Image (cartoon, rainbow, N blue to C red; front, top):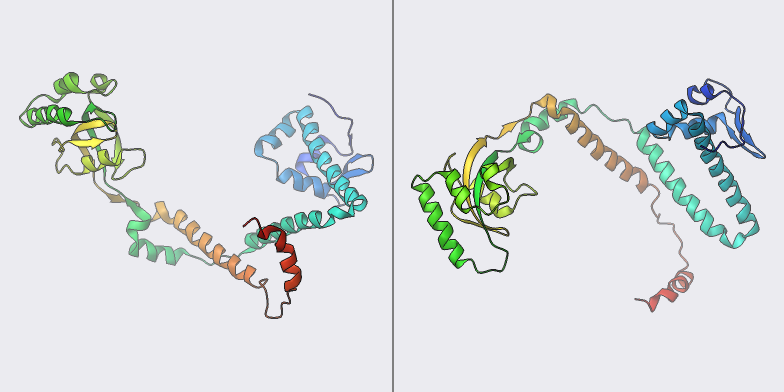
Amino acid sequence: MRIFNLLILVSSAALLSLPAFSDEQIVVKDGATTLSLEELSDTVTRWTPQMRRAAIQDEGDRLELINLALANKKLAEEADNYILENPQHKTEYRNGLLAYQRDFMLRKISESIDFPDFTELVKEQYTVNKDKYALIPERRISSHILFSSPPGRDRGELTVEAQAVLDELRGGADFLEMVALHSDEPNAVQKKGKFNRWVEYGEKGVSPRYSEGVFSIENVGEYSELVNSEFGIHIIRLDGIQEKSYKTFEEVKAGMIKEMEDEYRRLAMKDYISQFQMTDEVIIDQQALEAILEPYTEQQ
């Protein structure tokens, strides 16, 4: 890895352990550009764990990361110099800073929110809205025989064939033999016709009509009526049912508290932002505003 010509004024260990020096302690100096202990400390907090690990374990990686921080500082200084020489871009530059300042302020306010203790409230909600917070829906597992047919193709004859097979199965025919003789699903014989997945009603990733067919069967071992899906015609056998159940309060407590904290934060931030909205004393130069919007009027 390329080694950059950087003047490191503290040891490598000090860069990561960050002892309690003065905030003005200079850690890196390259010409007129410096990185103070405070600046570099903040930079290290925003590195990913992988980046920090690399900085600890490899001198070259450490210098690359310091070089990146230093380059960012130099670019910021260059931006300041550029605006001094090109004042026509001052407003664009200032608006960019305003956007960052807004995000910075909102982030700091969000981090400073003091949440109430939601423990009793979540206990109450667990009791009142148990289905919302703790329900584990019924799940079913099934097997099927697929008579393949692309969408749009006439399925009249295929339906007659599938119904005959269903009648045989309900009359006691061996399911695995019928799978071997009739199923068009790839590897159906090896899979013994199993739809090898427990599913909830309407579960994503499962054909809605197949799901409806599985949940239309009353008892394990029984068959659905013929089910038409985008894949063809299915004969579905219900192989097992996991009845609906509920997670314990302790299992859902943390998630419920987080949900309530998120909502509390959202409302607190909305309330905070509202104090900066336009007041009754606002003055707007309508003529100037119309002039600003005029070039875009013809585009509408």
